[in-house]
Length: 621
Image 1 (cartoon, rainbow, N blue to C red):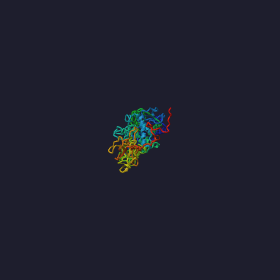
Image 2 (tube, helix red, strand yellow; image 1 turned 180 degrees about the vertical axis):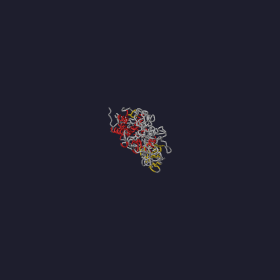
Image 3 (cartoon, rainbow, N blue to C red; image 1 turned 60 degrees about the horizontal axis):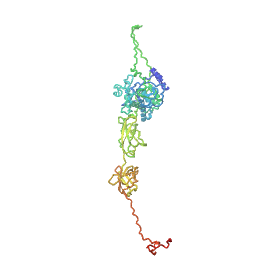
Image 4 (tube, helix red, strand yellow; image 1 turned 180 degrees about the horizontal axis):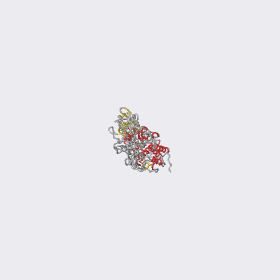
């Protein structure tokens, strides 16, 4: 082991602190007090069994979630990646070149980043970095065997650890009837993040939405690992919590050092490589693997013997008396000290997000009229598998795109936390102008748990409409009617916000629009408008303005109707304009004679009047 570890050190640790820790581990492994062979447990003492909230999985294995299965111990090179920052996650992006060890298969990297985003949404105080998942994925499976996964993130073949039969590992009898690991006798660590079945039964996730919790799927396994690392209220931005989280995955100081080395390395930068082309690690903590398939065994030393051989005759005793040959002495074992490990069997509270098994929709009917607040709030109850309420669960309420109803501040999505009764209550929901049914979706971030709540928005109603005032509504052809006020009521109370339809008809018995009666003016094309939609104000009243008489005299009806049965019929009269008769002429008398027509003037011989004395005559020649 010393030569092997030394070779890994020459290949490079990423910092002086890591080198110092590795040298200390190497020195400790050569003398008294050395640590036992490194363990490989996914969840360590903090893990919880599938059926007992206080018993670590694996029973007699002392809480090792992977049963001390082996892991890869390769360290990254001394040189850092050539490009800092976060690599793209899609497998179709251009490949960035750099050290082979810095490359992470595209789908695997996408799964780590998705897990980080999901856990940060449900448990932001944990501060989970995807680089930590990458470091663990590297030492557990070599990033899913270099990214040998299909398009859905499932490994092309199962990744299985050795049988946990107690021979060099913990003894864990079968817990899943071989469902995950194919072994009906003993359990095995499974998948790219190496969960044993009993641990997966508690922490398994369906992160890719295919309806299955598959430990061999990198999306499911990465999210489960992230949620496990955050268990117990850890804040991974704090070094002590970070160390505890890694040790809870595997209680080995060398494991801790190796994961931290890769965590630091990936934190400096990485790049995407195509699926299936990631660099595979070589060295393993158990010194055997695909290239060393046999489990090492300790050499057997021959027992001391006093049997004589032909080339070495038995010496004659100096004392003829028979003597008893001395028994061989047992070699003195060096004193050993028990390594410091997290206490075994320490109960850890499962995060509420994992304990919840179902969301029960509230029973209250969610109804409201348009442009009003729903009388009841949208609620769900988070319960565990036994039907007990679970407090502290984050629940997201989401409105569909089809509705114009909104949560406060115009939000279409809100996230709340369940109370001590397990009830998650959304803030007040206000209906919009659209009257229709819709569905509110409740879900647990990071889980596939959902519930649907039916909601209905109804139109505002009025069961009575009445005109305010009783003056006759009369106008001459082409003239304007006076303003009309109508009041709506529902069950005797004023009905604000009610939509009222006004139609000009030819008679009280007709609901059809008139062809030539009064109108509400003309549209853009110049056609008379004889149907109009109005709405009552905050006082339940509406005003009808701009009503114009048509060109045809007669009696018409303004029909008003409202949802809820309210109706009013107002008579509109159109009259011809009044006609004025022509003025009569004054009686006339004979005109007075003019001076030239005096009666005393003698008549001329020809019978014409004689010329006036003042008339001038021309002399004749």
